[in-house]
Image 1 (spheres, helix red, strand yellow):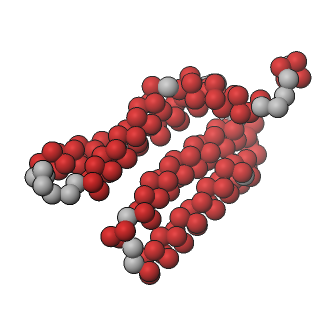
Image 2 (tube, rainbow, N blue to C red; image 1 turned 180 degrees about the horizontal axis):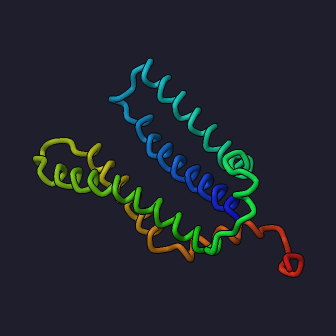
Amino acid sequence: MTPRQVVALAVRLFAIWLAIQVLRMVPWFFDPGAFQAPSHVWNTFVVALSAVIVLILWLSPRIIAGKELTSSDARSRAPVSADTWLIMGCMLIGLWTLTTTLPRLVYDTIALNSMPHWQDNSTLRHWVIYNLVEFCIAVWLILGGKGIRRAFRWVQDAGTRKGNLE
């Protein structure tokens, strides 16, 4: 891989991480207790702006990489394969997600178990389920690099015949 490809891959991995962070904000829109007109408009603006940034980063990583590297940097080669970079990137995104999700999951689980039985705990139960799903995704990203690589290859090669690729 050339340094330009490495930077483009890093930009796309950052776009994936940012998209995950934006998706983590979506449940706040459905919390009836948190709805206030000015904050709801602000949250919508932040999510929309973040989505535009994710799209720009995802659709133009080589343009960004070309602006970040000089022409002498672009000629040298990095010794690591693209699959290794993809697996390392997925693991890093998974570790980041795990480090932000695990403390919330533990806290919410302890709070849920310490609540009296007569008190309404449905909101807290929903957050525990949400954190469990996020925890599973993080573990999958950390341990399932090969499956993610196969999924990326399938999307990349969709609509083409195997004979045309060689």
